[in-house]
Length: 362
Ligand code: HEM
Image 1 (cartoon, rainbow, N blue to C red):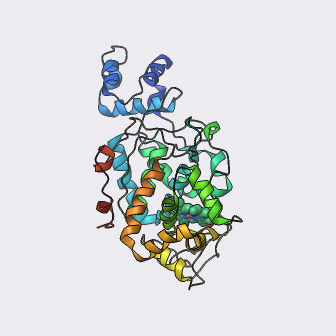
Image 2: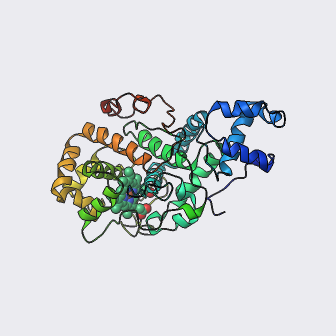
Image 3: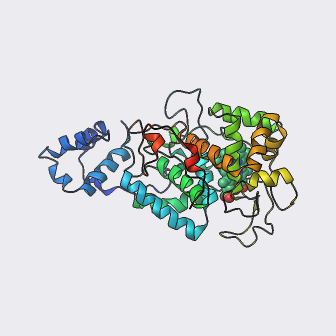
């Protein structure tokens, strides 16, 4: 299988195929299914402790021809702590955000079936999708996350990519993203979307192109502008996307691997300087892609860009909502309402009060 990494799951090997089938069929997250299985003398010795239960759940997902089980809440929390540690040493916030965006951004709202509709389903772990031109360089992000995936086999790739992206935004000083988890993974490379669903940076008519691509995802003008604000972080590299300078005064010393051209001077700090810098266009060392420039040229986009350039709180509020929406695109959740790992009220049924998320990282 061409899955990235693809660590063996030992517990899957100790189960006879009939048992695996029954586990797959009862792969809902309901405790009842495990209680039933526990009472079976034939396999009761497999349920000696919770760890074993979680391994079996994982093994049923690895064999996920019927339905994959969702992520484990405790493992999600622990994985988040490991991602925070990774960020402290590798300064990889930008590429983790780009990874989450590129897994989700293939969503096509006009296709109902999962996974044909694309979206946040972990398909980007397969080599065939990593080879899409838009994904150049993202293999580095996958390599950084694979040890965490190996450690927390009860976290799906789809969840891990979105967890890493949201954590990176928050750790860079951005707003708290009201996330939920429980995304089911696709299981084979044949389930990857075809190439060409992500946006180009230099199409003939950038504003039209952005609308074509993002409307297909079910996103609107405000969300296009807010999400583009993620370019407040990171760099473009000519050897990856073909865009940007090989290095600038802001990137020649890293942190992380040096080089590339950033959109902002402090490209590891999540703030509204992306909008301020594009508006001023005063520094040759800062990047403005044709699709970035369109945000101040198109009359409808410009309303939001001007607002975000002046009002960071407004940007943070809209960004947090748009990022959460992006992270859910096309995803199949198990359980259907998703899993909340830090008590975000909105995903448990309460109304989302965005101002709560707009004050940035404490
Ligand atoms: C609006 C259409 C978009 C276009 C045309 C676009 C294009 C690009 C390009 C060409 C790069 C440089 C990649 C490289 O050379 O390594 C890049 C990087 C990046 N993009 Fe976008 N992008 C878009 C939207 C987004 C969105 C919606 C997000 C997140 C919500 C995002 C997050 C990032 C980040 C964080 C980087 C920096 C990656 C790094 O430093 O390694 N982009 N984008």
